[in-house]
Image 1 (tube, rainbow, N blue to C red):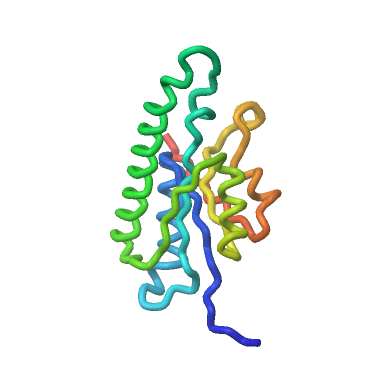
Image 2: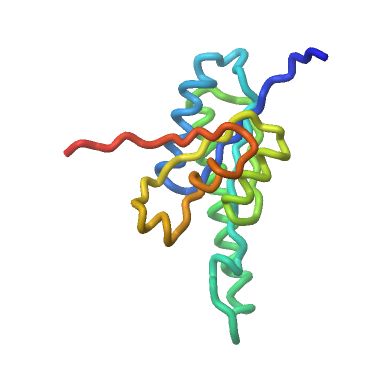
Length: 161
């Protein structure tokens, strides 16, 4: 059964420069040149941490802090999505879906790939060394091994001094 349905590209975003660069690079190479008929449907996904994971503490008083942390995380998520919308508008990409999903970015992105039946997942690279990657974990590395689609890791070029 043939279909004209476009493939889906999921782009993971956060509040980092690397994430903004990855979105801009993706729009420049896969969407802007085909403004009237891009080859993919675009889904932009931001993983909002849970308040408990952001606070990382338990005990007396922790419950009192969580509503404030949640408010801040929602504000950050809104700012991240607004910035993505601005980047898309600047690149004349007007048709896309933007989602904010609560959870760990690794799981959120892999689940978004499955939910949207994506062909490609795009993530930025923070450029951590081996030690930081081991301690903090690498979203791009996790997705490269666990996402059920091709994963494109966009690295920002190093600036030569």
